Amino acid sequence: MSGKNTEVEQPLIDAKGLRTDGRKLDELRPIRLEVGNLSRADGSAYIEHGRNKIVAAVYGPRELHPRHLAQSDQALLRVNYRMATFSVSDRKRPAPSRREHEISMVLRQALEPMLFLKMYPRAAIDVFIQVLEADGGSRCASATVAALALADAGIPMRGLVAGCASGKIDGKIAMDMNDIEDKIGEADVPVVMCPERGEITLLQMDGKLTQKELAKILQMSEDGIHRIHEMQKAVLLEKYAQIRKEIGEVPEEEAEVLAAQKPEIEKDEAEKPKATKKRTKPVKAEKKEDETKPAKKEKKTKKKTESESS
Amino acid sequence: MDVVAEIDRERITALLREGKRIDGRGFDEIRPITINQGLISKAEGSSEAWLGQSRVLAGVKIQVGTPFPDTPDEGVVITSAELSPIASPVFELGPPKEEAIELARVVDRGIRHSSSINRTSLCIKSGEHVYMVLVDLYVLADHGNLIDTASLAAITALMNTQVPKVNITEEGTAEILEETFPFKMSAPPLTITFAKIDDTLIMDPSLEEEQVMDGRLSIAIDGDDTISSMQKQGSVPFTYQEVIESVERASKIVKKMRKQLPQR
Image (cartoon, rainbow over all chains, first blue to last red; front, side, top):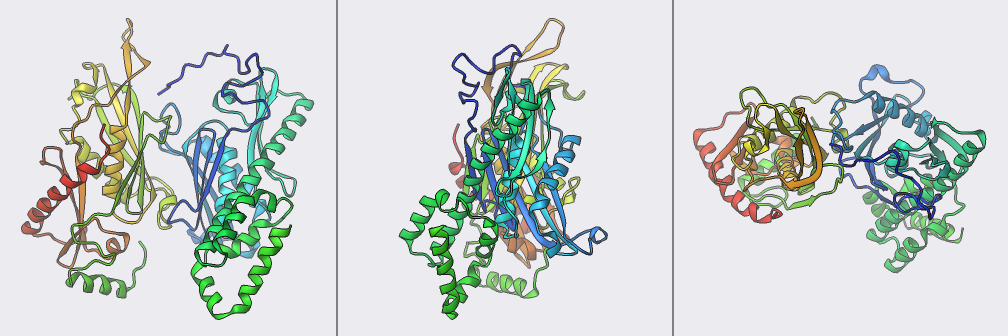
């Protein structure tokens, strides 16, 4: 049911240059990230990006059903983007829409280049994205949360992708468009990137833009994506600092320091998800190893100091 | 269904014979309840219910529609559920299967036949416009007994619901206004599910217990201590005595549960 009555004449930028939600033109909406929030999934994550609320679950690599879909040389990545019926103003019908099918496809293609699918022939990696509340830029936020869930599942990745949809409102270029800006603005450009590799893995656009404007929008989104990327790394590090604290691998104070400094620690560290992979699942197994093989423990401490110094 | 080793079943049944459950609970002890209301601002009402680690999110959307011809003065309340793959590695995509449909229908009947919702109060203009209250359930984590978890989520979401006022224009169309009023509901029905393992009936089965159970009995107890719906599941018979005793046990626990629900 449409709660709001947005008049089209309403300006999107006020006299002070602020947007309808009080943001500056180059400001992101508030973002909150969580990892490991779904208890039955192999990997999971949650994002609040503005009023977007999205959960993602990852399973696999696991046996692929139905088996005739299996690829003999690589794993099959399946991505499913779904919106809850109550996630939008007018109730969405429960059956998947054309829009959901398309977004599932572009998100799969946005994530695929980050994975080493050849490592798992005949297997399946399933990513399920459920939008609980939508607020403009939900496909970009979905890419951000899906990448985190994949990392949380311990699946090796070339890098983390993150998304940001910038565009043009009232003749000006604006970062990270919200619902109203998306609906009545002049152009919307959803972008998903792996900032560490400078690769754009999702790009869509609708509206009307000059070449210069497009260039500016892409730069602006890249800037936003860099900021989101730092938050992604921070939340993953925080979780693993917590796990290491729980298994007694890192003294409590040190874990706190680690958690507090995280964005700086990692600035130029590439291939982060690979490192997180080792620490994901086998918490119990690691514990045992530590008891029996002190040599291994040494290795890990070395790694920790490395990441501190970089 | 997950494959359960015979040894798991043996362990659970052996414990039950000693009067114990695998997670240490008593036979009539339900897992802790947590309710988070109003998480979804685009829904007219919402609530996330946790029963132990089982977790269901319910959202309420309200539309204006035409009443059923046989009940021209009554609004409509419909509950549906989705067992999304995010909730369990064994749930699959696709149209709702037997299990999801049963879940939605059992929760739906518990609410539909309860006296806590006065459906005539959801009538806007007799025979023409009524409120359609659509409750959608999304399971976020399956750790057993989704029926009771979903029913808690649905009820607390309804308790959280704000209904928009409607104006009937001169042409007779319904116009939705900004102004709202709280959804009217008296003491709601609460559902209690028993798992039957051998000849023992235990309340609020966990996932492990569900995997080895022979049958299940769900009972919704209304605000006035009457029964508003029941569902027996599984290909194992229940005796007359078992049914009567279960209702009695459920009624006792429901009285305690009511105190834990958010007040409005």
